[in-house]
Length: 151
Image: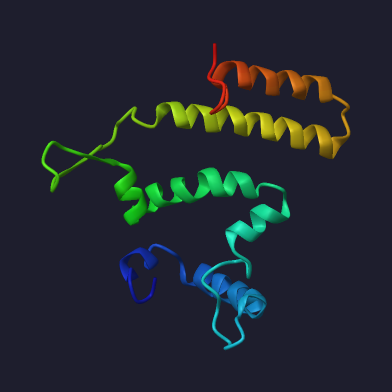
């Protein structure tokens, strides 16, 4: 902030700035790479590796990569929001607000709720497996599978 947004930093008292800098200096060694520079991420493993470690690699591969590309507007995300027009050399961008990805968003949200229920049931040993199974069944009834669309 000192270099890129000094006007914003002026809103923070000097005492608080010193406290933040002291806290940073205290924890910075934990986040340094082998060259002694502070890493650009809090973790030294990739997001995919984190997802794999908690049994969510499939969600990472099927959703996170694409959602991240759209959110950060990298080339994959930009192309995901375009359609070719009649002319082969023109792409039409689907701008927000848009319902173009609404179904996918609802499917992911529904699946995420069930995933949280399953994980919570497992972690807390609640014994509500039948409830989770009913939630799975309701998901398949609502959305189907690629091989079996919903009725």
